[in-house]
Amino acid sequence: MTLIDKYIIRKFLVTFFFAIFLLIAIAIVIDITEKIDEFISNHAPLHAVIIDYYLNFIPWIGLMLAPIFVFISVVYFTSRLTENTEIVCMLNGGVSFYRLLGPYLFAASLLALLFGIYNHHLLPKSNKVKIAFEEKYASKKEQRTSDINYHFQIGKDTFIYTQSYSLDANSGFKFTLEEISNKVQTYKFEADNMQWDSTQRKWLMRAWSYRKNAGDSDLVRRGNDTLMVLPISPRDYVRQNYDIETMTTPELNKFIQDQKLKGNENIKLYLVEKYRRTAIPFSTIILTLIAVAMTTRRVRNGMGLYIVAGMLLSGAYIIIQQFSTVFATKGDLNPLVAVWIPNLLFCVIAVFLIKRAPK
Image 1 (cartoon, one colour):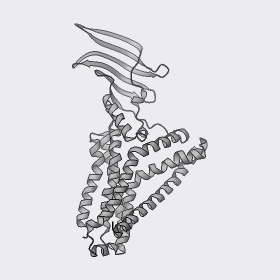
Image 2 (cartoon, helix red, strand yellow):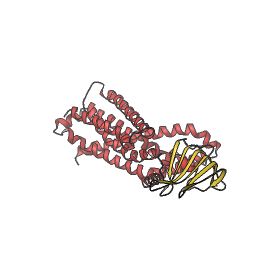
Image 3 (cartoon, one colour):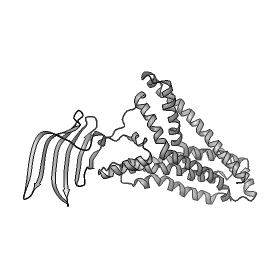
Image 4 (cartoon, one colour):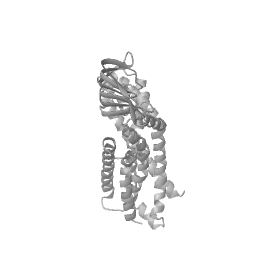
């Protein structure tokens, strides 16, 4: 590793950590301003506020915007190098542009690896403590959403369908349980309404009927109310978005597999989170390449122009990311494709800018 490599890597890391430190400091001040009344009214202990909340809030907010701040940091310090003709001297001294990318890629890959490890294994554990504090002292409510058409597979040949479910009343509408063996329906139970009985931990079925295959004829029964034991609870109908944040990737993989076995179709949100934990850190490398390629050309009012362009590109990346995530969770777009669309688009931009960069 040459002196130039060490110089660039040092500039890279020092600028990034200084920028992220400023971001975290501003974020903490804003968050304290918003939540101070809740902390006081809920009698949150000071040590819990500092240790349980803010020590876990720092990595959460830092990692959320880390790739964008890597991009802005590289734009800032590389444009300064360009303005001071240091980049020109390096290129004129025989250092090729692609060789110049070496220390940038090294530092960006190091940060991407750090972000990835933290996203997959450490941040979920940190989030678990932070969210537990918020539920107790900051009045964080369940981020629950009502959906339609729930499907569960509770046995090899046993399936459950619920047309809709009310999260507030813990009751469902149009419930069906059926057994299908060798593509033949052998049993079917239907109820107009279902209500969770929390004391007996059973489901109260109203206006029910069932049909059972009994050889040459079918056995049919009807009734008004009956209690039924099922291997599902209201929690299976509830999606708590922040629960995803508390699962490490091995736990998330296991959860997704369990939901698939149950026949639950509402797993796109979890798949998006799984793929996002790798795609976002990887974006650090792509954004670094774009930042270097666009700031090594000296132009009038270069630093200001580069910073504005960097902010616009950062905003475009976030917008594309949000749109693709919505299409994945609410539409038919594959979650893996949706998560990687921003990286693929910006990878094309990176190749284009690198080819046009002064060599």
